[in-house]
Length: 62
Image (cartoon, rainbow, N blue to C red; front, side, top):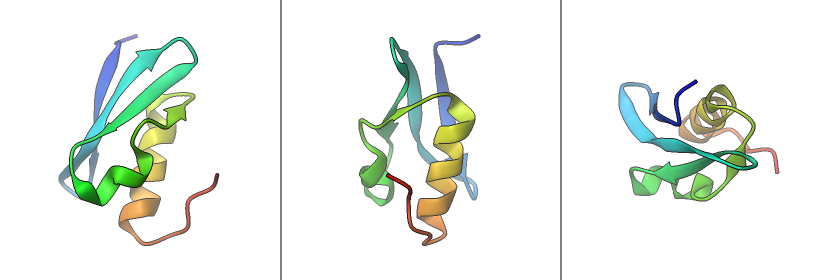
């Protein structure tokens, strides 16, 4: 498994996730995704799901 992944949403780069001892940490690529900055996810797919929710205007789970 890779140590980092680019997260794209609707053909826009949302950020990257980097392997961290507790999972994958998100680093935003644009202000649109700043709410995810530093957040820890279990896996890259979970981070992508959160970025999609944010981009579509849905409420993020805590």
